[in-house]
Image (cartoon, rainbow, N blue to C red; front, side, top):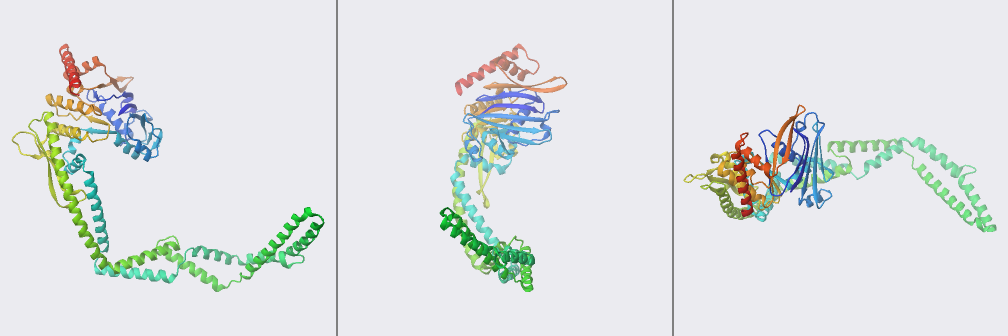
Length: 559
């Protein structure tokens, strides 16, 4: 649940600390007092879109912090490499005046996308526009599937559909007209012939470049090596001869003074090393006999490799070899595409049969769920003062199977006795849409893992007994999870477990919005204001007291 909300410099809210409680939390206040700003702040700290306009005028930055308890987000935190706290989950977001944003979870920096992903697990916000979503029939299938509890059937269908689309893609890749096939075949043959004639070897360019660098410096290298060879072996005296003489003398001395044995051995080893070095230098000198023809051949080979890597857009010889292998495989595929197409089309037909079978099983599950969903929502709507309502989930077959099955789903209703069923968009009023959405949320809440629901003025167009029933339904939902509601209706506000008043004032030439948790006496006064506006009398106060007492009796007896 959302335990604490801290707001700084968001629009007209300079600073506010809100301690939400369990059950039903209600926020009331005059139009324009800032109730929507509180909801905007919650959306911001959950990763919603923001802009620099949200920052209070004159402030450098805005800041929102939300503390959740019992969030159940341990798996998300583990998957994202963040530390878990068994007690609290802290979300923070800072928005600077230039529009930049910084987000943190439990003190660790995260992206806005990560914050949004986590927020979707913690809290669900429903506003007036959610009623409009009910008019979008493309969403109705998703509503039904989320209720149905047949994830196994959906997964089975999706697996076969993915297999079907994969085979279809292979067929599409092989299907082309004859002229295009011939052109591509000739191109591949030319590429294969060119790369095979090049006789490419891995690492060849590095070897050739090293050889070319050696040839470019042959004169200087020969001079240096000849000087070293002469000093080691040919000059009089030379290093090898001197080391040999020194070794003989040291060996003789070691016979007279045993402590010198190690030194004598080291001199002997040095002599062997010098001899070996001289021989390797001599071999290198004899191999430095370069011919102009070799250098030209080397340059031509490097030029060929450069041209090929550029032509085939690869980095080196490995890329050229990979291109050669891919071209061979593609040519084989083209040459045997006729056989491959026959095989793939047979696989596609078999896959389509399985797809239709899985789709039929899914349709059967949907029809069962549709009957249950229609009955449940109709019952909820009757409780919400729509006694003559009929609500049905219509399932019609698609002309051809799709990614989500064989079905098209539409919600149908009749609001009045004797009237035929019709599409919600053509029949439901604004107040009816609000109640339909609330009825659906009441039904879906049973399997929804999100712990906090926010209803932002979804009571628009609702009044009288219907408003009373909407409030009772929210209180019923709040018996199982936390509910936060923004409302103008006293019937709903009276059922609150925690009641906040949002008020606006001016001080020092600036407008400020304040959030105040009300005690019982203050709640009575606020209910009276909701009933009578500024004209609060003893009569409206007594009516508000009676309404609050009635709401308390309802909660104690029914919830």
